[in-house]
Structures are given as C-alpha cells and as structure tokens.
Image 1 (cartoon, rainbow, N blue to C red):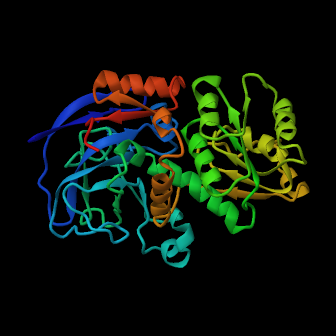
Image 2: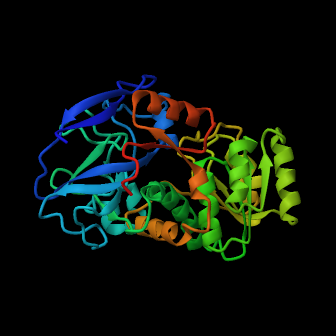
Image 3: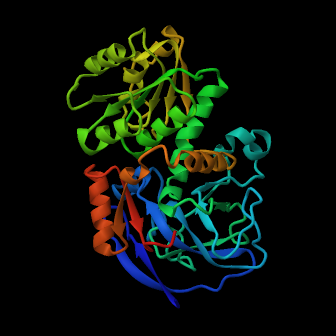
Amino acid sequence: MSEIRVSVFEGAGTSPQIRTVTRPKVPDKAALIKVGACGICGTDLHILKGHWPKPLPWPLTLGHEVAGVIVEKGPALEEDFMGNPLTVGSKVMLPPLMPCGRCYYCVHYPKSANKCLNPTYYGRYLSFDKPPHLWGGWAEMEYVDLEMLPATKIYRLPDDMSLMLGSLSEPLTSSLRAFKRAVSVGGFQVGDTVVIQGSGPIGVLAIVAAKEMGAGRVVVIGAPEKPRLELCRQFGADATISIDEFTAAESRVEAVRDVVRGFGADVVMDCSGHPSAGPEGMEMLRDGGTYVEMGQFTDAGSIDTNWHRICVKDINVLGSWAFTANDIPLGIGMLHRAADRYPFDKLQTKFPFSEAGITEAIESAMDMRVVKATIVPHEGIG
C-alpha cells in the first residue's frame, strides 16, 4: 500500500472528506499502525459542533479511541510504555493525552500528571497539513514517532483481545480513574451503592468499572430507553431511571432514593456533562457521600447554583479529568479480564470507513440511535 486514505474535516460543522496521502517512511523510533477500530467520542462530537474552548489547527483528522496492528516499525522502537515487546503484528492502542514527564506537575505530582504543563494531545490536535498527515484514528493507518513527539506512549494489547474491544481501553480507563479518585479519599469501597448520571458510552463503561471494583448496587440515570437504558441493564445496572419519564430534577432525586432504600447513594458519578447534573446529583447522595464529576464540558455554575450544599451535606466532591499514563494498563487489564462478562459487542456499532459511513456514524452518535459508534477502516484484522 503506497497510499493511505484519511478522513479530514475542514472545520466545525463540516462533513468528512476522504483524502489520500503518500505512505510515509518510518524512521528508527516510529511505527505505522493499521487501524482496526476507532470509536467516536463525545469530545469528537463537541469539536464538530464547535464547542471546543480553544482554537484548533484545522483541517483535522479526528479519532482518538484507536486500536490497531503495527504493520511497520523502526528498529529502535522495541517495547511499549510498560516494557512489553513490540513487533510487527503487535496489537496496540494509543492514548490521546500524553504527559511530558519533565514539567513541575509530572515530576512533583505524578498522580496528577494528567495536568501536565506541556502535554502532547495526539491525534485531533495535530493538523492534517502537518506531514505525515496520519494523526487521527479515523484513517486507514495512524503514525507514531517518538523522536518527533517524545511524550508519545504506545500500549500493547493482549494478543487475544479484539481490536473492537481494545478501542474501549481509553474511555474505560477514564471511568476507572474516576473511581480510583474516590477510593483515594475513602469515598468508595466494596459494597457501596453507586449512581451514574448519563447512559452514553462513558456511563456504560462506568458500570463495568464500578462492578469490577466491587460496587454493591449500580443505578443509572439517562435516556432513551432504547438503546441506552436497556443496554445499561444488560451490562449489570441494577436499576435505571429514565429522564424522559422523570422530567423534573426533584422526581429523579426521589426515584433514586426509592431505589437505594436509604438516605441516599454512597457515590454519584456524573458521566453526562450536563451543567445541571452536579447540584442534582449531590442531592442523590447520603450525607458524607462522594460526588465525582467526569463531564468535561460542564459550566462552572451560575451565581445561583447553590454550591453551599457542598458544605452543608459534608460531601467529598472530586473532579476527575482523563487519566495518567499508568492508568492505561489498568484499563486494558480490566477489559481483558471482563471481556466475557459483559455484552461489549452490543455497546459498539460498526460503521464503514467512507465519507457516507463516517457521516452516518456521527449522526447516529449525535441522535443517540447507537451507544458507541465505531469506525472500522479494516474489518477482520484482529
């Protein structure tokens, strides 16, 4: 293959264009990865809607929930970030957020290295105009170069893990780290009741993380019933509460308290990103409970948001954004162990790598006709 097809967006609100680029030469510490699967993330949808808070270097190739197979690599690229050997044919994933490892936060606060002062945001933050053009997962191949971007990290996937499942490594890790944050302050322990606000892909994967980490009961709030809430129950949610049925915040709070049969939930996690989720979710907690905010696009809150409830209820409120480099292997391991315990194949819906296919995938994700839209440039490679 001397040429590689890549999907490109000229800006927010534009449609994908399939362009062809020349296959690049691969230097000593670089690799070409044939993309087997790449999910559509809520972040991608926000970017396409023009919600990203900072200027972006359009044109872009989007897609950062990527899993693929190394088809060519340089001789100096011998192992992944965890020391696992890398060869042609290795299955790998690439996280979008890579700390530099050298700044003040990385050195002094390694557990908060996701707040790195000089991060590399792989994929969507590198312009398509910058050779070798293969910066996002919505493409036939993706390119990594550790000399060009030293902070780049590659993670080998288990040989028997499908690439569809592997493409869930990054979003699952975000959910896993959020619960780790709660554990770190004594706010989540085995047997706790967990309420998850949001029934999208992150909400579904938060069910997996909660169950695998020992949650007693898991309740999910979201919509629509099909395909989302129905799927949440298949993934092990003990109860679901429809925002279409319980339209008022007060009724949702009451419904949660009825389900948990007590003073409130031990942990509430917002996976919806809706500005009103925080104040509402805190009322679903028992006093002394833990609220974890995962929404990356929530507003800071207006002057009448009633944040004094944080003090009155004596709540641990945690922000959890993305993950650190050492969290990724935990996510991969959890997916691998849990592969046969959850209907992951029902979570992901495949779409072909074409302008029409990518457009349909984006529209299906925006309209919530599917839960996790996943673009598949190469079917059957793993």
